[in-house]
Image (cartoon, rainbow, N blue to C red; front, side, top):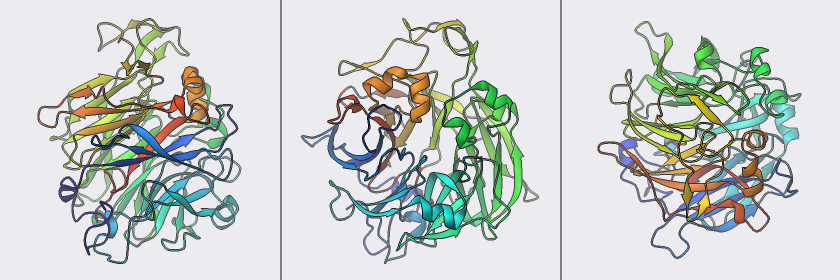
Length: 473
């Protein structure tokens, strides 16, 4: 199986070794019914992505969670390339935290890779009691064998960026990773780089605010973040906070370059519609600079007179050559050459839905980039709902998988048709030589046709690991 590496332990020795790994055959996708009006539990879908299979581009298994209203969101592995060389470790459990319930599902994908099963459920009471935190978001496996999950708030829904540690064998909650008193005002994602003794975390907003939907007045009232936080990886203490300002509003996904010696990376700022590069300076301190700005579009027929791109997911190819990100509201995916990280160069762009489509309710009055509004996108006769949100790149960098659900309450507000019709998963072919993106017309997973009704598809994981869950140390 792709999840093992001989007698070497999980994952791959280096990012470049991972690029030589086997082609993905299965993808596990977190699917959500919360906020859709369908009183069904969220579930994990197993999708066949082997073009030689008769089940290509189809959901071949569904694992419903045993509870309602969890809001599955991000997911990760029990172990990854950070444990390469640990011969007793096997990448065979998928960790699914819940944003709303604060429950954690540990799913066994090793016993039957095509039909996962529940291994353990960590109840929210255990998280609340031991960590005084909740609203769980991003999991990462650590070189220690433990699992760390970021938190978005305290038990009352106020903003609180902390980290929950799970035992890598028993999956019991061990407590907080951060030293007491070091929690941040808001939480979201994080990435660590042990060779520089650093972790950097990001901010979304207060759960009791964003769970009700988005309101620009909440931004003005200070309920959303605009900073990234630098941590001492060994001491578990916060040593710097970098305020990104108005251009850096709501910094969500953060990625270091994959090279474990690298002392720089990128963070995508949703409301600022910008990409910041963060880097280590000569004196050991960290700094950040804006390197990409997606211009707002002046519009009518929308919630605001100016429409941001709303950058959601970002990722970096394993060879650290390309940066990809989604503009969930504008509706495009962009590919940048980051050979010179200080000056990213746009080399690919494709529209997959969004709010400015020709013939829609929104009229673009002024656009610094486009000469006309993009046409609606159809794949296999299905009009693509919503906009591109989650992206996952194949190990070799040639295929980009895309889902369209951001978060159910925001889906309901920005793309109400997606609540009724369900989300989709698409696959984009990538030109890795000159740059460029094109739709694979033979691939579409329509979550609007699920047996229990239309579902919202969010994060996806390959069984052998990928460029957003594996970290090399």
